[in-house]
Amino acid sequence: MGERVTISVIKADVGGLVGHHVVHPALEETAEGVLEEVVDELIYDYFVTHVGDDLVLIMTHGKGEDNSEIHGLAWKAFQKAAKVAKELGLYGAGQDLLSEAFSGNVKGLGPGVAEMSITERPSEPVIVFAADKTEAGAWNLPLFKMFADPFNTAGLIIDPSMHQGFRFEVWDLVEHKKVELSCPEEMYDLLALIGSPGRFAIKRVYPKQGSPIDPNEPVAVASTERLYEIAGRYVGKDDPVLVVRAQHGLPAVGEVLEAFAFPHLVAGWMRGSHWGPLMPVPLEYAAPTRFDGPPRVIGLGFQIKDGRLIGPEDMFADPAFDYAREMANKVADYMRRHGPFEPHRVSYHDLEYTSMPAVLEKLKDRFRPLE
Image 1 (tube, rainbow, N blue to C red):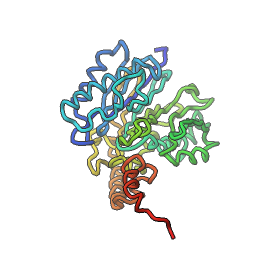
Image 2: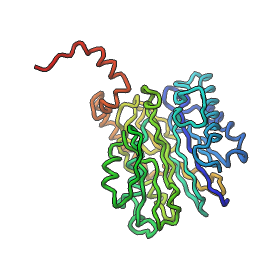
Image 3: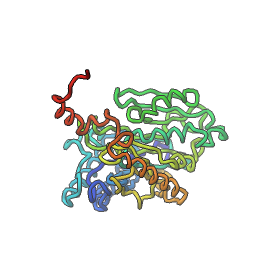
Image 4: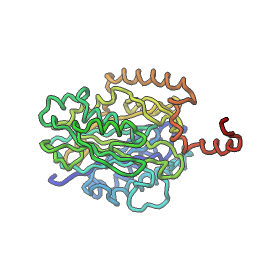
């Protein structure tokens, strides 16, 4: 194409069929209708999907990141889908749309956003991941494994174009700051931060000098919105999205997917207040039910050619991930037996956005000093 292509993945919970279970097909059809109207005018291509009760819009275009027209298009699609959700009496209709007014950017209004502008390679494999019943920091461990762990990604050792490692842009979600760390030389500093995924989250990964890819272009981008901070109250977990490029100087597709073969513990699950295993599932299983979970992640693979989305391929439909799902179910059993006790229930700090303040307020006059 000769120009940079922007991949925008924007998701929102606009209403669930039977509680927080799944997106009704009518909502996807409504969103598809909105996007179809502007193909070849505003956007190059699109794909609409879901994970659990989250509606996910995948778009390619030439407008760049944070573009008001693209974000306005997504907002229009979500608003129309939320209207249908209300007509159908779906649960939590418009839950993630925290404002009636669009101000030029959906960030801060509820939806999760991951966007990257890239110079399209002759062959451009991209995988879009979307998770339900968890938070932005859920991507920390998989992204570390993909781009910094040679036990996961053999290319870090045997591919000369990857041997120098990658740079990680990490966001402090509490102090609203960011820092860039280079691996492998700053690996321990990186792990010191991202090991606390509720506060620090990997936002972007970049190649280094010597890579066949422009070091100014990201090769992975995650959404990092925190709904309870935006809304000022508990409104559920953030159900993040992630875009990862693969091959030719980057982790191979199989190395990217291998990062999810271990169903690591993430915060979210029931009422956004419990730790549970992140289960990699095909689309047909992307409808969590047990205790509203356990948390799920889907992976859709595309080839991007001249801005068009060739695909998707349902990457976790492979039976090779059956063992990961079995392990996730066993871990779910173990965690559930803790009931309302930590470490299944999230920490006291995270519960400050739920009923905990009301409980303490009710009991405050009954507390007595320790003798």
